[in-house]
Amino acid sequence: MLFLSRIEFRQNDAARFLLDDRERIHAALAAVFDGDPRILWVLEPRQPRSVIAQSHQLPDWTRFRPAHALASTETKSFEPRVQKNVVYVFRLCANVARTTHDDTGHHKRRAILDTTEQLAWLERHLTAAGAESMQRLAFPGGAQRANKTRWTNTRRLHGGERLHNVVIFSGTLRVIDATRFGAALEHGIGPAKAFGYGMLQIAPII
Image 1 (tube, rainbow, N blue to C red):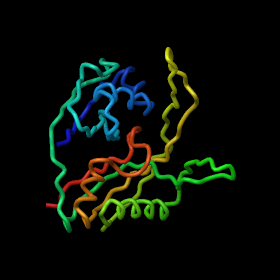
Image 2 (image 1 turned 30 degrees about the vertical axis):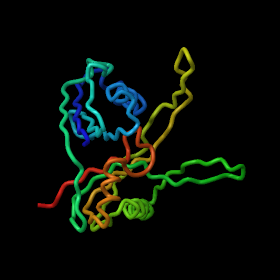
Image 3 (image 1 turned 180 degrees about the horizontal axis):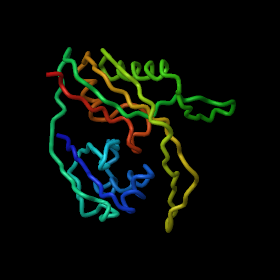
Image 4 (image 1 turned 60 degrees about the vertical axis):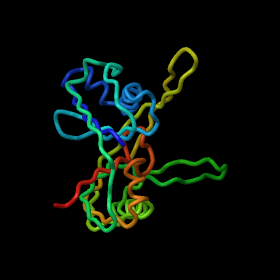
């Protein structure tokens, strides 16, 4: 069983400060879900601003900080049941990048900016997830910021910024392997899931 939560935010300074940095959103959700590393979430673009979060445990909203940024919360349970050969509408907010290595063996993620390559990235990940796209579109979301943060025993240190190349994919897909696709729904697709990327949202075509 999984849980799906909608978190709506007030239009105040506390909410704007929180939503300006995905590291802050990640930290706030980690506290609510007791550090569960399997949380997936997506920041909805429409007003009022909201976050959709998927988790393996019920949230404790009394632990959300800053509390006065919250307007409302709603949580429901669901089972991610999918069937082979069924077609679904999908939406995916992803950090689209490729991993490169330099001469010393260090690796870096580099943004994929070409639309054709972005769609190829999507197709590779859907294939690995046991699905194939029927129709697909890619909308650039720009570079999104998350502060790099590390902890000592007594304080938090900031180490610059982490930038993600955001692409919002939408369209229709067909399930080829229900087991693999169910796992992708549960665990997400692509990198930087802690920062609000990789949560696959689907709905059956009626």
